[in-house]
Length: 98
Image (cartoon, rainbow, N blue to C red):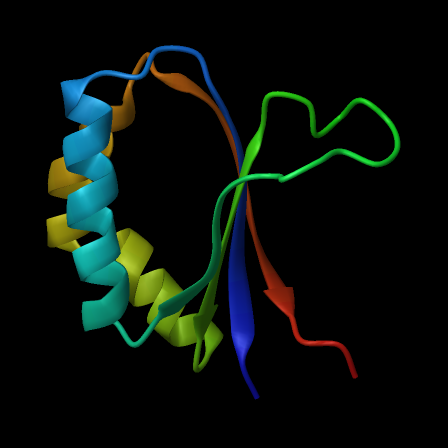
């Protein structure tokens, strides 16, 4: 059953490092069996304020182990610093609806 890596991001400093991080992390997500389902800001916030100025990233992976291999791998650790100082990132792993 698929699992999902979900990130809610508030980008406060878009810069070349973050653009490089986004491109390189996308390549790694694919390498580790993941695929983006959603990547970007909402078209419209319908209720509440928590999604204002936020981007949502949802990547589907075959299992939790694949996500942990992606996040814990040397390749990801080598690029993670590129997003330092660029925003606030809330990230979690979620199971598919039963």
